[in-house]
Image (cartoon, rainbow over all chains, first blue to last red; front, side, top):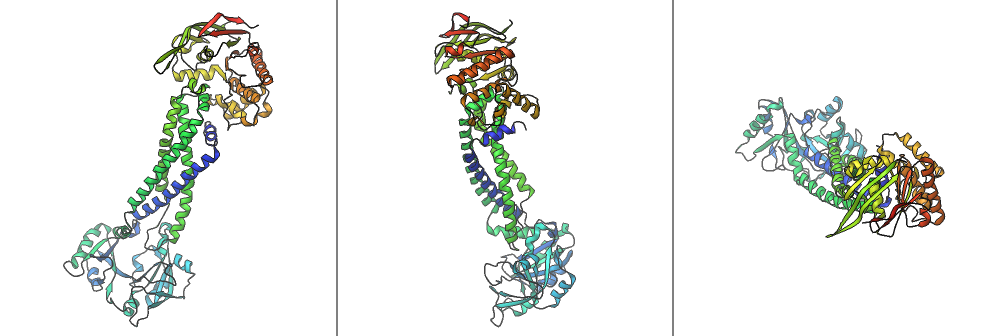
Length: 387
Length: 231
């Protein structure tokens, strides 16, 4: 700790240069914190333990192809299946297309499949008993200032009604919450009764978008998935049943290989950072050769000087990195609030911090290595003589 | 008086490209503990090289150097660094203070290598600054001090760890006449009142007058009889 004053003194020698270098480090780690959070969130999509006992069955051809509702009872008959629910993507717009949120027609027991969602028994009953009833997540209700009893009109983008009307109006009968703060993005959804939807829509009646199958024993999930898919084999509606996690991963992979994209961006950012900070450090050490010579003269060993120079680079990286990550945490929280239901939750996790700290130390050592080596090899008499 | 510095047949050769330049040769010199010696001679005569060898900043190419009973020419680089921190104080022509540190922090620097606590380091630095007459400028940074004051801070830094030997390379070379006289008087006091052995390199005969003895170097060898009492 007693050497910290020397390290600080060196960093403060050229305040503006240090400030600009610090800002570049802040920017790099702000970007890293955000992108790594997003990558981690996408990689961990559906990894919540709540989804371990849920399977999702979709058309084998494409997610958007409908499946017959008649499969419902056959799925319920598969040994090991605890319950089956179903849903249909609606894709309605509330007032303005920029007000995007997930809205789906769901079966009466759909919410029962998600015990992590909290909805009072009275509101649950109201949802079952109200033909035009809808429930929304608390975040969505807060965003649009909705309250129980409100009528919510959605403009259909896929499904018009039989009478040609494209406006679907729902009665808000319940507001659900999600306890896990990391899963709060699930509160950005509106769910309404599938029966109302199926009776009123102009086409596709009697078909569902996907089934959610609850299994009694998660250890038997693979066997049950195979049994479900076997029901439709060689039919015109072959299915693909997978765990909720695999389904969500497949869904988000539509956006591209997030890991590869994030990795490529970060590699470019950190490569630039290494060049920039390395150049700054080299310049700073070059200017301080007489000072370093004095330190050696009064008894600092070459190893101590090497350590001081490395500490200087690492301190700069750690300070900038921590500020960048703290900023990333705030921005990530904002993104999480803004993200729709279909996105996995975005978090600035401990893992991101751990990876970032590792990177700060690594980059600090890399950019400090060359100047520090110069300090190590410095000959006092040459330096004092200006050679 | 006991001999503090004993040089026997010391030589120093530098390599410049493919050429070897013998800067010092056959130097035999004894400096007594408590002496104040001025090293004089024309440019290129080897004064600074000799001072660097005595101060343990450089190693001789031949011969032996004994300071305070220790063969410093046989010490490793790290051992030599530790030896310097304990036994030698350095003063240079251009002060070489760290610009971002206060005078007190600059003086404290050598004490960072000791086991002293922060409070003890600070107390000793204040005493050293008091000795050089700059107690009231302890919080000032070098840029806020005059050249003479900066050199006195450098002297405080040199004596703060209480070394037996002070080596000064042109300590007044960058100062006006009055500041130079103040610095030399200070060195004289440290020699006379505190028993420090002082060796200074100087071109200035007036500066050499403050020393007890003068050593003349010419073309890498001691001129005439070597050590002579100052005029």
